[in-house]
Structures are given as structure tokens and as C-alpha cells.
Length: 470
Image (cartoon, rainbow, N blue to C red; front, side):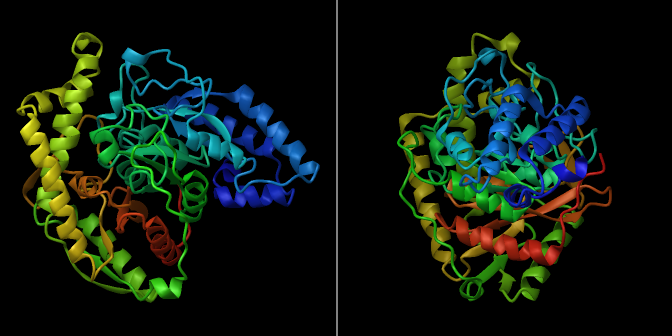
């Protein structure tokens, strides 16, 4: 049964079309996998088994009748529990929304269903999504399928753990500062942070407005790049509920044309050191892309340090100011992780109208500077984070004799949220302890297709995806 649940989503859909496997068989295999592993992982917080079985029966009948099938027909997926799925809880890991049930599907969920996907359930998050690990007072801690003493990351940690462990074929997370890419990196899967507005964030909580619209996105997570590509194609497209939406058509460029583009890479940012195994993963990715015929050269754009500072001013300080009215009368009900985040924000001066305006202008200036530099290297390759999956509760790490603090370890993702650039994590290596290590492929805004195509070439050189030992 577990072998069936580890098929790529595109293979599941293909075998259903050819009547080699049935949607009913596939859904039952995933439900059995969830029953076996979810008590250890705590990845899914609500499983909609009854509805999934009904939809699987309907999908099987459609196959037998020879009806037209979507690209995800019969494929079981999961959704982060900060995105509306009709009839399921969308609590974003907080007691302040306990029992909240979505009345309708978010547009991206409706698009996935229209493509034939079957939603198995919704996955765990940290409270209000404000952490790079997944734990809350509502449902508790999610564990990494590679090592349950470690986190699968956050805030899309439940989603990453479900997909990596074969409880789900793929799904959807959200990312305001690494919340798709860090869990993908920690859990050994792929995750795409698109350009804001490319996939509608309508139906997400917190709502996509203000700094959350500027920095935050929703995006696909899966075990393979091909699966990510299908999920992206199905979900993309503008929606009036997303203030960043733009009518950008999907455009795939021939790989030989893409190989004319130069790829720049760097192993560290000169500020936050990364582990030796992380450096090795970047070098391995460079060599793989060179074998595939790409031109790859060292390049680190100027402006990354100021980008990280500006990201914190928007996500941390401005985001904290938005959350404060919702939480200030409920301190006793907040999780330790969220209280810790609130303490970090409280240590900063709140924005005035002038400081917020200055931050906005500085953000636009640094974007222009970085984009000018990237005329020569329109694709970047770099680490996802300073460390692989960390043990529950860890807050600092020693790398090359230097202390790396919790808020600094994920700066490799935060820059690209501030700059509005698409980026994705692709698993490439392993740590000495057997933990997965990903690298990040980053492109210019609205160039998700280029990022996915380069990532596919990297994956092809890497070889077959390997699952966790759980």
C-alpha cells in the first residue's frame, strides 16, 4: 500500500486514466497510510474520509463511463489549514479560531477539485503561521518523518510531513518568509513560492492584504517537480480576491532556449553561515546543472542584507501590529511560539506613518537594484536555510564557530518574499545524520515556468526521489 502512495501524482493520474489503478484503491491506500502514521506525525488535523471515499467512487464511475478527466483526476491531496476548504476547519493553529469551519472552497481549492483532485483533509500549522516549526495549543506538535525528534518546519509543516510520508500525493502551503520552502527543505520534498498574485491567495487566513499581500503567497508542494508543475498550472490565474493578481498567461519556453540563460550561485550570503553539507548541496546542484548544459557561475547580488532588514520591518513589525488587536486580550490562550514571536516584535519600535512609508520606498529601491544586477544572471541558485531540520525547541546553532540565531537561519528565503520573486526548494543532498537538504532555485517575478524548468533539469540529474525511513 505504501508503494502506491509514493507514486508521483502525475503517475497516479496516468494510471487511473489507463485503468491500471482505481481512485477508490488510491484513496483507501492513503487513508490507511494516514491511520498508520498520523499518530506519530500529527500532520493532518482533520481527515475527511467519508467525503473522500464518495468522491473516489464518483471518480471511478467517471473513468468507467469514459468521461473526460482532468490532470489530477482521482489524485488524493491535502491543504494547509489556513486555506478555506468547504466543510473543513480553517483555524490556522490558533484557539482564537477553534471550531471555525469554512463555508466555501478557496478559488485554488475549487480549481484543484475541477481538475479532479480529491481533498483528504487539512494539515497542521503553527499559531497564526508565525514560525518556522509547527506546534500549537490547539493540535500540538508536528514531527518530521525523517526523524520524529525534529520539526518538519513551518508554517506549512503539517503539509510537508503529510506529503513526504506518503499520506498525501501533494498539496498547498503558504509562504511569507520561507513557510513553503523551509518545510520542503526540512522534509525532502519540493515547494514553490510563486510571485504574489500568480496563484490567488483568496480564502487564506490571515487575509492577503497590506504586508501579507506584499510578502505572502500560496503555492504547491509535492515530491517531484513534475507534480509541482501540474499543481501550479491548475491553481494559477488571477482572482479578484487577491490584491496582487495579474492576468499572466502560462508560458513554457523550450529547454534549449533556457540553457542560453546564465545561472548565478552562491553558497552563503557573507552574513549567516551555512553548514558544510548545505554548501556541498549547492555545489552538487551547480555540477548537476552544468552537466545538463547550463552556464553556471558564482554570483551574489548586492542588496540581500538590506532586503532581510526590510522584510522584518514588514513581516515582523507591521505584521505584528496587524495581529496584535486579535491577540492582546487572549495572552493565556496563545502558544509559546507565538508569544515568543510577539516578544521579538515588542522589542522593536512600532511603525509610524513615516517609517512605514520609508520602508515601502526602500523596498522598491532595492528591488530595482537587484533586478538590474540579475540582467546577467536571471536565475539564482542558493541555500534554502542555514541548517537542515532542527530538533524541537532549538533556537540557535553553531556553524564555523559562529552562533546562528533562530531568526537569522531563514534569511535565505526572506529576501525573495521582500523582493516578490518566485523561488522553490528542490531536495539535493543529505546531512551526516541522514536529513534531507534542499537548494533554492529563484527567478524574476512572473517567471515561475523558468524556475520550474530549471528545477526539473536539476531533479533529472539528481535521480529518483527517496522517501523517509518512517
